[in-house]
Length: 221
Image (cartoon, rainbow, N blue to C red):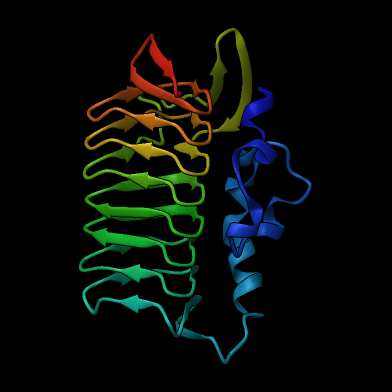
């Protein structure tokens, strides 16, 4: 599981939430802490660059937020981020610098690193998306198992019990998820990996690879 530790998935200089990761080993450990972190950080943001636009929602003055977007707190929208028409942020969300949250995309309990794009009809819940990761149109994170049992992260024969009922996906930096793909609960995708469109992904996918279908993963060259 070494390559799925925080240090091997993310460049922590590319998120306003870097301090949240301190002392943690795996990124899913942070999911229960996002809400309280936002409430603490929001109050300390410099007022010359950020403003509180509603209760427990802080947005950079340089961010572009469509009038039709719905943002519930706690939430932080960082500089140059774009929240497009009819986006729905349900709360406990950090949207990084230059990130795009698109038409009818829904976020809940997430950290989007800088330059993340979830631009078209995406659902991202209980997940962390690394620097410049991108989810194609209609791709989603499924964050609750059908039998409602706790999520276990699995990499071959290795397993880590998370103790979490809700856990979507952890995407490393520069991950590309193809259109209409489903990332099942507990999915972890290593840096610089591509997922084919219409894929059903489960478990851990190594860094620097191409996920074609279950059992068929090629190494990038």
